Image (cartoon, rainbow, N blue to C red):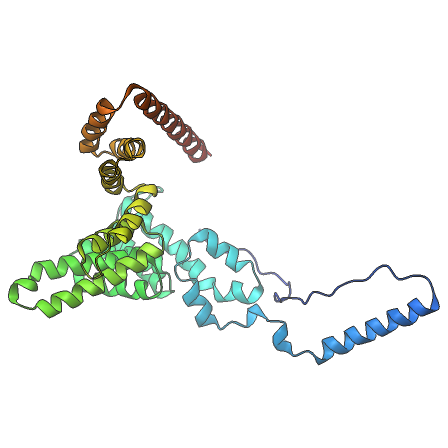
Length: 329
C-alpha cells in the first residue's frame, strides 16, 4: 500500500511579499481631478519601476539547504504549515515530510503499535532513514535506540548532530549522556580538574540552550546549575527563575522544590498550591509538607487555601475531560 507524504502539487505561483500602495478613491469629477489622478498614477508607475527588486523580498528564493536546516526540528503541524507557504518551500521540505512518515513507522515498530509487532531493528532502520533526510526528531529517536543498545558513541553522535540543528530534546539528551559517560570514567577522581570543569561548562551550555528552547527537564537542570554554580556562575535569583518555569510547565520535582522555596519565603498560600501539584504528580514527600503547612495556617488562611485547591482540582478535572474527548475523536 502506497503512502503519500504530502498533498498533490499545485500550480500556484511563488509567494512574494507585495508592496502596499495607498489607494485614493475620493477624486472629484472635474478636469483638475483627472489631471491629478493621471499624475498620481504616472508617479506610482515610475516609483515602482525605479524601486529595486530587493524592496520586494522573494521568500521562495531561500536556498534549499538553509530552509532544510531551519525546519529540521519542526514538528508535523509546523512542517505542514511551512510547506503551504509556496511551491519552492513545498519542494524543499519534501525530504522532511518523508522523514515524518518514516518517524511514524519507526515509533510503531519500536512500541508495537498500529497493528505491527515490535521490532527494534526495523525501528532503528526507519529512524536512520528519517535522520538521513534531515529530521532531528528521527536523529533523537535513533540516538535513544543506540543508547539502549549500549552503543553510546553512536548515540552521542546523533544527539550532537541534532543539537547543533537546534533540537531542544537532543540538546538536553546530549548533556545528560555526556554527564553519564564522564561520571563512569571518573574524570575528577583521576585529577583532571580542568577537564571536569570544561565538561561542566559544556553541559551547562547545552542545558541552557535546551531550556531556552522550552524543554522542561532542561529548565530544571539549568536551575540546578545556577544554584550549585556548576558550569554557570552561581545565581540564586536565576536558579529560582528557572525552577519556577519548570514547575509551571509541570515538572514534579520542580513543583516540590519551588513549593519549599515559597514556604521558606513565607508565601504559604502559593506554597500549598505548588506542593499540591507536586503531590498529584507523585511526589509523596510534598503531601506531608503540604499537610503540615495547612495545619499551621489560621482558620481564615486555611479556608482560602482549601478554596484555591478546590479550584485547582476542578480545573484539572476539566482539562482531563477535554483531553479525553480530544483523544476519543
